[in-house]
Length: 465
Image: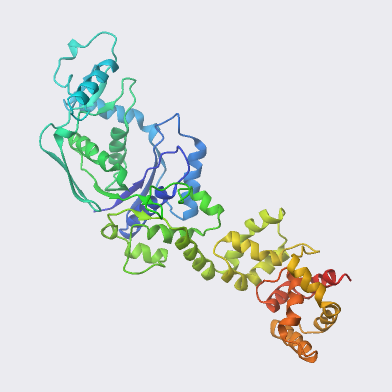
């Protein structure tokens, strides 16, 4: 069987982290099976849907590297097709007009509550003649659902799930204003898109029973279901913004790499032995719904940070410099020069071991792009002041050195030994003057990357020359 899955977000907000994981699982399942991954925007809630949200979803998926097959389907554009199917069910006797007024439905609910029964439509118009319809009451169309037996779902994650049909009432499939309801729209769209597997959050499990009944009433093949447990916070509570329930764009802004976020989301509810670091190629090769857990997963920023640090370390220096450049430019409020971008690439090997996010990397990378004269931290100022004439003497020594990491280190070491000093005593005021800080990547590597002119210029600034 050729596999086709879909991701179907509602454009009422950003692409949140749970939705991103659902998209990832669908994408991996399609890739693993040589199938198709489709995208459908469920924009039938016109009041809450927005084009900005649509763009955020598309941008988020593209940034994560989750490419989809075919054109994006917009559910609102298919409403005529949905209504057509509702009327087909009506014509075939699998649905009926219901003329209950809002007051009658409210009385029905109150009676059920008073009698201790579940609140559900009682089938008042199920078998009545439409000629008995009251004047001036626009009808809805309800599915004539089975009243006996069971509806069974063999779920790839939840296992066998059963509901007695007597617990499900005749749901509305077409409203009085002619607009289709959610469950009908989903069934028709999934059928028309030839969806074979519906992989989504387990908050949709109850909908699966309703949708299965619609499929069967139409004589269509029911897709296979996989309902994934939701993501909770690290404390086990429902995921909220304080736990990480943010949009994918927020994680991008916080400096996480897309491959790190993909890896992290993959491990939220899916496992492959004890493997933690899983490349995208490995994920495609290994992914299967049988390894999705039945319990909620817990979002942990510490684990995400550690994983992101790993991906930063193994990322190509040129690509990493390109990724971090916008964060640096935001910090310095200007565009980087080509020379500064070249320095970034050259210095990236020493920088990338010191950061868990691109935001942190941008901070430590400032040493290569800071404008002269450098802002000097207070502790660094103290080291420069304590060095006195030593800094000028060191500048002279460095000016005559071969400009290469080992040669620069040897020159400073020999100078220190000639004065009866330890290397650190000479290197620390140099570091303070060249970087403006008491902590930095390898001092001699920094000097090599900055180049002779920039390094000696910073030393001259600090010495007041």
